Image (tube, rainbow, N blue to C red; front, side):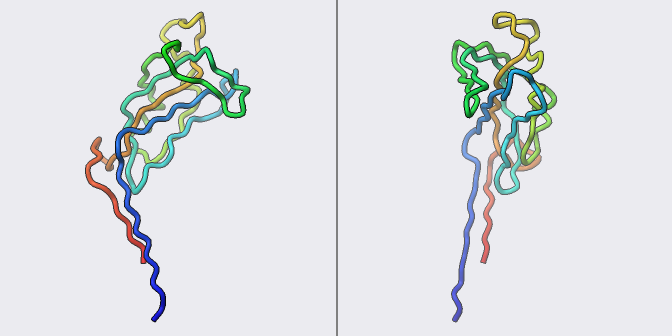
Length: 139
């Protein structure tokens, strides 16, 4: 008898996911923020999105630093580029969403944000529900 190999995969979304990412340079270019792929055929459901300005922002660090805390100036956003992530399995968002992020000049006269925070779920397609799970079996 030969040896049988089995690979059982189980995945289910538990709670919300969060993308917190910094602008990569002083000039906003063609860089993107990326929401990674949802597992097992699930899709993205954006709960909320915030664009902010962190005074601790350091784009010259090996990994840009932009902590989100009470000292930040933030504004909620429903920018169409972010909302278009709904029902997608993964999503790339241009850092251009940070331009003119605020309705008026805020935060010491700055017009552009330097970070984004998106709270999202991976859900079953066509819903906002996380009910059920997906299973895959390979023999």
